[in-house]
Image (cartoon, rainbow, N blue to C red):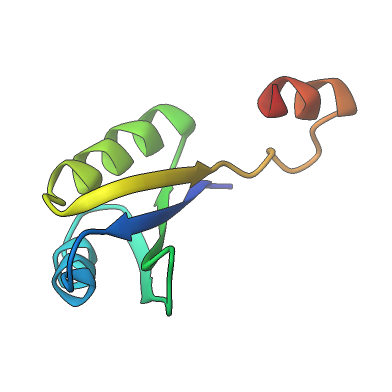
Length: 90
């Protein structure tokens, strides 16, 4: 099973379309959608493990110059116990 992160981005000015276009070409970025924000853009990054996920997500976001704010949503791994879920939330 692959690791996933969902990222919500607020973009400065009217640059959401350009940001989405840039992100679509980045490795690991599986989905990019424009929203009637805020947030302005949502993307999903996938990788074989959480370490690679962090690398790909950071690389993709580093290419976005007009990002004003971003929120990462990391799903709890399938089959995780309640104690593991709590560790991800805190």
